Length: 219
Length: 213
Image 1 (spheres, chains in turn orange, yellow):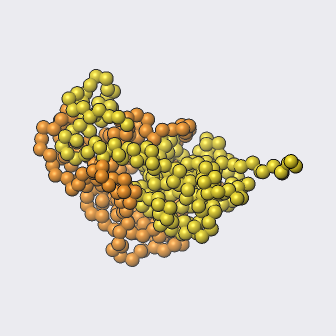
Image 2 (cartoon, one colour; image 1 turned 90 degrees about the vertical axis):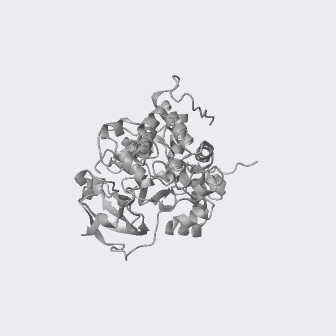
Image 3 (cartoon, rainbow over the protein chains, first blue to last red; image 1 turned 180 degrees about the horizontal axis):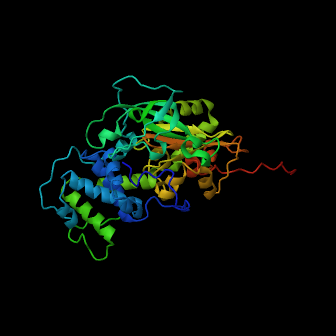
């Protein structure tokens, strides 16, 4: 969706402000939100693409006025209610008044570190041969889906070159809505800075995007 | 790390509004059995104390001393990183890109906050915030200047936008005057920002000629 999350190329946000010796978390509530998001994701009630879709569907003014973990918290509250794991009234009260809904699994302390150090791969067996090969010139589709997608606006309608064929991966555009993992070829596509930004592009500069096959067409 | 899992007063007056919401949600989800606070404590401890850029620095140092390892790392990064016992959530599909005199690499996620957790830890606030996400792709030299980094005009900048589950780490160039350095000494020169591309590794002054005793 053309939401506030799609920030590439925007002006007016000011300078980057690095924080020396930055801590991993800035408050205890950030620790809890981070861990809650991980633990709730583990239940299988939703997936990572669904979390991203929910975060970016926050109203743009709210998204841009919120800190990172405030965005996560707002999305968590929405996802818990949307999946029926708890009602908005229960969320407001912080107390259960409705029965628990079964979830696929609950993250336990035992074995947790090994589980997270093993990871949760999203690669999968391809359903069809790859349409593009390294070196192909492709056009990123000028499409504006209202749902979740991972093709940034700045690349849409632009011509690029396939640099890497990454393999088949879970397709975020459908997986976000529990509408299937839909194994889809993923490519790293390079664009010249001047193709993306015109004369203001850094001369000689390149921007690469990891683009799913449906985002691309032959140029 | 201490956390009071109070169920009785989720809206205690000493809490800020956001703290009260977090407390209420955690209390509710715990009561319903969807989450285990002890597991959450362990997750926080893992990412606050164990997973961090020291892991990526080990990868870089190994690549600097071992050309075969460097070749494996650039060809297929995930198994090469796993050789050092490093991997996991947010780094299942790693791509390592090497800086050269011709090309400087810079990593961003314009759409959210994708970042290679197993090698760099959780991302800093600036990486997740709009200024960096907005400008890294359109004005990389301006962003680098804000980090105090100047890349020669003759060096091309390639920006890697992390728009899928592939995660990028920059392999910086080995600093001069480090011949004979141990891997540990080399790793100590590798900063987090050098592996994002917003920084360069530490520099080492030339060894002065030996003084007669």
